[in-house]
Length: 119
Image (cartoon, rainbow, N blue to C red; front, top):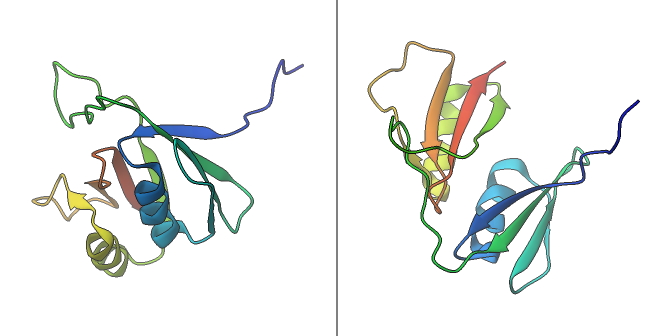
């Protein structure tokens, strides 16, 4: 028997509204709230939350001496088309040299790593 249910994944960042807007552009959905806590309600029913973190230091990827902290795997139909869209929204590629795999790694505007994964 489970002790709890997963409520929401929360990403620390310097600007919660801006990062929620980035992920709304990637995942769809509606951004709710302002200030130090902002929620993104996605069309599939999942939510992401964004919390202001003074002194935020972005994770490093890849870095054997530093933790990436977490990452999101986002499933897409067309890697090339999805890549163009996330780059236009402000993502930065972290593995620009290898296009042979079925996944690609990026950083969101606050520096959190995420992957686009071919389904």
